[in-house]
Length: 369
Ligand code: BMA
Image (cartoon, rainbow, N blue to C red; front, side, top):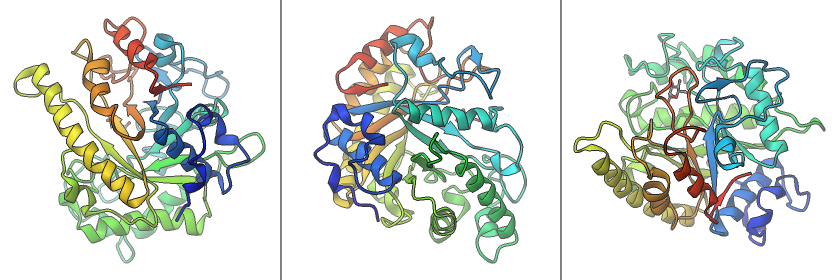
């Protein structure tokens, strides 16, 4: 288990810059965890955006190997890069060049390195294909998938091969000195719902925990990666008991995360949807704060947003009031898909409510790069 008490003295200002600070003892993972903890303890919340350096609302990087990675929808609106960069590795397990969102893995790799070079934090999600049917991560047609990849299952060797490919990619995430960069890894998320093949109705608690431990064991014990922080992130529609029901264990989890969106199709309209989101979020963040304190874990809002922003002040009047009093290390909004015009969860230059994001980004408590 990682020790994070040593970083209590860090001031908020040094949080991001200290990622490379030799003074923090421990390995790269310990250092990153210290920074997240120190930031949260200082009352700061880092802002994160998914895929921010790879593409934006109406653009995408066209030369993955050489682009300087200076463009960012967030920066174009508020003048700063997000402090946390989310990146998605779905379909890396197939061995191809591009992710399920058609982003080249070389671009993903370079973006991660650039983010760390700028003093920021990187978090990876992974929506691998359904290993039993070959369909997407959202294929929930069978409740035998997790069982099939665990030890003794017919797809165990295949899944081990997938982990190997993922591990090989992780091994390329090295800075100019050849050192592995620290990052957060957040697999098997939103398992409290049943929309992914590893979801609640698709496997037992024992199988879900075994899936986590298999993943962790491979990366940490077999491959020796000590630069990864492991993040558990259920969906927000559960109570504290539901949140912990399938918890893989304090010995392998570093961050208690949470995914929760404002619904666009809520009965009663957008005003009611925002209220509903705030109610659920407040309730959930309250118990998450307690859990984090009790278990000595960093907490974070690992995915959120309002797709398409049909609400002028979502950032300052819906999101901010409900997160400001909780010690979350960061809040990450999902991607602005360049090829799906209505699928955006972050700001972009020219959007009618961009100023609301700007106000949010200028708040003293919110950290960007
Ligand atoms: C989902 C959507 C999909 C995307 C997936 C993985 O929430 O944004 O379009 O493929 O995340 O990034």
